[in-house]
Amino acid sequence: MDCSGCGTCCVAPDISALGKKVGEPCRHLSGEQRCLIYEERPAVCRGYRPDEICARIAAPTLPERVDNYLGLFGLRPD
Image (cartoon, rainbow, N blue to C red; front, side, top):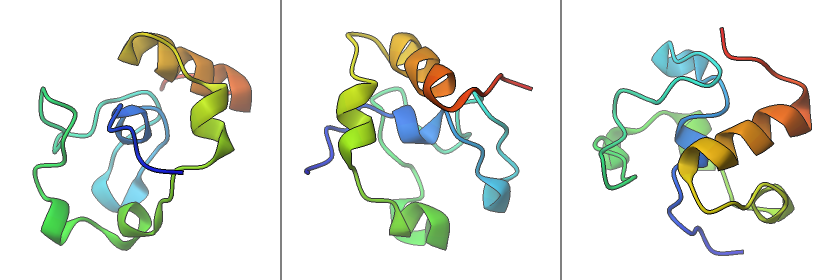
């Protein structure tokens, strides 16, 4: 599956390597849903690959996709 560039993976999950909490946008995510440190991003981000979860949480807006992701995994923003 190709990345759609929706930005959900940079908002919904926690990314401890960046001190990012669940549901909090990564401080390196641009307004165009692009990583501002792409070449230097941590290993956890480099290793991420889009999969069927991306299709399961699909929605028109980033907030809706984040809500779908959090609901799928039973997570709540900190």
